[in-house]
Image (tube, rainbow, N blue to C red; front, side, top):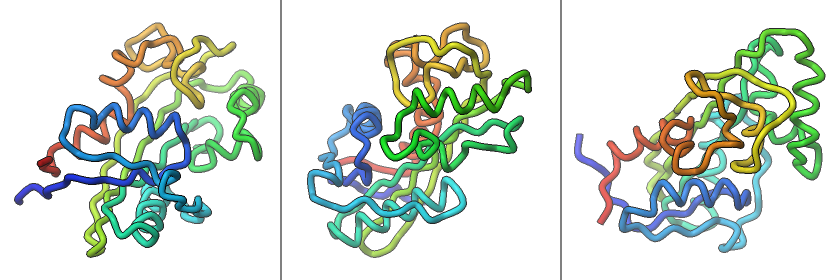
Length: 197
């Protein structure tokens, strides 16, 4: 299957931390990156029941408003001991202000003495104006720790220790996290399908 040629891409997100991280995976390629918020694209309501569904929803919404190839990303923390929560509601556990200190406290309170095994999921969806769609997904497994540790990363990173490591994502420098994270694993698949001018 021939690779798809891509030279301009809208990142369908208003989360500046997420946009920065996604851009870091594309910096070495000759592709113009534009965050959707710079094009005044309103943030859509995430109404789907899966990471893949919400990633597609965001990308489709961006294409509709920009008529440019768009990349939607939906990611979150899955904790089996909490029946898969917070899952697709990971950001919403932080309330209206998406306060992840609040969200992490909520996870810890509900977890109590239950199994701390968890994983991060990242689904990315690439949608084109002709409605061609491709999706990719990455997962990284680990355990939750308390109290949170580290000032790097964002979201639930300070309470997540990936398997095989002692540091949380919040303690890891971007140079290490970017080689093992769920987003990296999703983008590793993305690279295999896309050709950059």
